[in-house]
Each structure stands twice: as structure tokens, then as C-alpha cells.
Image 1 (cartoon, rainbow, N blue to C red):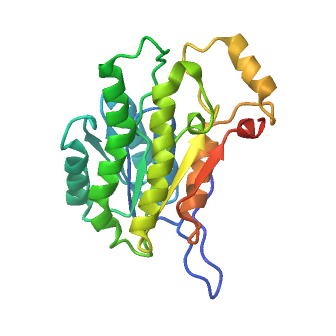
Image 2 (cartoon, rainbow, N blue to C red; image 1 turned 90 degrees about the vertical axis):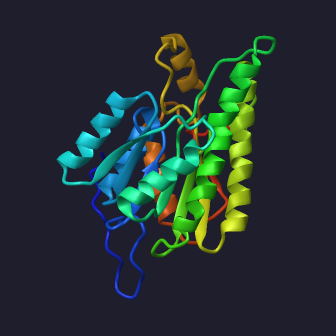
Length: 262
């Protein structure tokens, strides 16, 4: 969790959104990797957090325990978001448990290496169901509740640097993340002015567990900032977007400058 404390607005200003006390946030895929960091970051600013997970129950339990250990509020919600009806059901469960929803963070996703010639229809359908269909349907189901949020609701979609670069072994993944960027712009247009919708496209902030050391060193050398990022960098981008009342429809790339090499 971050060490920063909630900030109070100065005289004559409105309260800053990143003081999230009294707000409820749902983070999908919050039991692992970046999703867990986002959940902890929201709790650190005072939000009650709905921790969604599918198979990562142990990780979700650890996130909930960490939040509760510091006096925060968190509850777990299990769902396979690729299943028809699951996105709508989990929104109903969260609102039923907390009686409101102020922030939706669509973090749950899958990244599979799928070289051309080896992509199966099952892989394609699963990636699109989780990476694209689920966040769209979650946003659609959450919208009526987010419209009632104090000061306006917010949706944060987690895209990927693959939305802007061509990765030969990950074409379907890149397609889903490119679509997430377009979805962000479309939702921002139709949900304004009551709900702001933005996205974050992380670069090298968490490497796969089987990533080779020499490949990691190559990434560091070819990144303008010459170092990897951390999940905390993504958390800071999320908090900025929650605290930027005149920003909607945008995607912040958090990649140490890799996207500007071209």
C-alpha cells in the first residue's frame, strides 16, 4: 500500500476525489498482479473495496486481509467474467453489499502468447470475452449506479502498451487492448457528464514469471528511462485520473517511454 494519506482540499476548492472515504470501488482481477496493487491503492485513499477474483482466491484473501489490517473495508466477490450474465451479476452483488458504487476499475484480463498459425477459436473467444466483452458489460451495468456517485462516478480501464505497438506473438491480445482504448473513448462520450471514463496502458511494470533475465535486461536497455516500472506507477496514474475532473476519454501510457522510441 502507498504511504500517502488522503489530502484535504484548500480553502475555496472542492474536496479532492482521491480522498475516497465514503466511496465504494470495484476492482476486477484484484487477487493478482496489478489488480491487487490497484485495490490496495484505492483502500489507502479510504475507499471501501470490492475485490473481484476468479481463481485467485488466495491472493484476493491476502488483499482483503491487508486492507482490513489497516482499518479499511473490503469484501471478496468471485466470478468468471467470461460467462454470460456474470458481469451484470457481480455489479448487482457489489451494490447489494455496499448500497452504492462510485468507481469501477476494469483490470481483469488474460495475456496469451498466440503466434500466427497457432491461434485457436477457443483462445480467441476467451481473450475477447475477458479482455473486452466483460469490461464493456461491467461498465454498462455499473453506469446507473455510477451516475448517482457523489461528485460523479469514474471508470478506469486497464489497457496495455500492446494497444499501440505490434507484438507478433500476441496479435489477438493487442487487438483486445486496442479495442479497450476505443471503448474508453466511446464510453466517455456517451456517459458524460455524469461519469468520466479513462484508461491506463502499462508497459513493463510486471514481467511474466517465466521471463528470461537476458530479455528483462534488453527491455531495460531499450527503454528511454532504462529501468522497469512497478505496479505503484500504475496506481499513481489511476489516482491522478480519479483526481482530474476535466479529463475523460484519455489513455495514459505508463511505459518509461517505450512508446516514443518509434
